[in-house]
Amino acid sequence: MEALLLVLRWSHILGAILLVGGLAFMRFAFVPALNDTDEETRSRLHESVRRRWLPFVIIGITLLLASGLTNFLLFNSTVKAEGWAEGQWMRENSYHAIFGVKFLIALAVFYLASGLVGRGTGTAWLRSDRSRWLGVTLGLAVAVIMLSGWLRNLHTGPAAPGTEPQGVRLEQAAQAAADTKDRYEDSAAGSAFRAEGDEAAAEPSAGTEPAASDEPSAEE
Ligand code: HEM
Image 1 (cartoon, protein in one colour):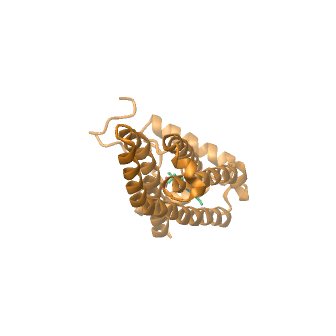
Image 2 (image 1 turned 135 degrees about the vertical axis):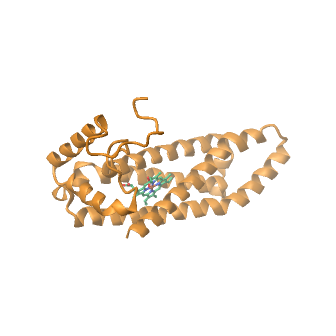
Image 3 (image 1 turned 90 degrees about the vertical axis):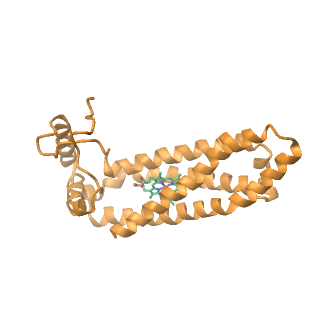
């Protein structure tokens, strides 16, 4: 299960990098650079790049959809099977609402990103004003990333120095899973977990391993 989750994470992050990185490069480097060329060179280069980049956009979207849907279903079944917050965790954290907004925006990103490298007449309006629609698509993709980080933070917490590592070291995974489960049992357990984290951050020597001496501390 751990291995599957890791593969899903790699796939999702690689898909996101491919899709969003390509959009950023096109919007801020490729399209502005072509503004200095004549009309004929411009359309020839646009066509050439469009044809070459299309398969990568399809791969990125496929990776994101396949890994995202599987991850979503697995996470739902874990929360249900372990009875987080007596079955109320999803509702208490509005997880499904945030996920729903992310999913809808992601679908819009997929449509726009594929239309920008497609050649159908139905999406020609996107390519007739590339700079604007690349910017819009990129903005929506950034919103998706922010919502994704929010979703992840809901159940992993911030990776602050002095707090427990969450899923970082495989040999500690079993203990981390037990700790994570405990803090979702009810709101009192959650408050106790956060208080422990605050204490540990204030006194790194009490109960947590000291930071390596050559690492700068948070106060420095
Ligand atoms: C533009 C498209 C998308 C982008 C840029 C994107 C980006 C991300 C990023 C950066 C993360 C955090 C990854 C991590 O820290 O491991 C994430 C998590 C996730 N994404 Fe996506 N994603 C996209 C589309 C989708 C789609 C279409 C789905 C579902 C069908 C999906 C489902 C998920 C799920 C379930 C998570 C885990 C959230 C959690 O930790 O609770 N994503 N996504």
